[in-house]
Image (cartoon, rainbow, N blue to C red):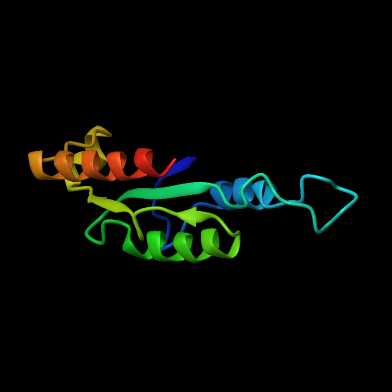
Length: 114
């Protein structure tokens, strides 16, 4: 399984993440474009950290891409966390007890699926 934890860039995913996913979606046999990819059928889940949106645009766009890649998306659009101004200054993500419980539930759902 693959759990993608990424920041949001203009309501979408970073270019370097897209490049990784493009490579993972390539056929395993370079001589047979119909062969399976490293990603096909694999379980994948998404988490993001962003401003007020909590990365919902990123998670929606990424979920659509992962489904096109024939990956098995676990926990729908995943989990997102709001970064307040202090998080941007300090570089630290401080989660509330409720957010930690939600992240734990997300992890348990993902682990059960793989």
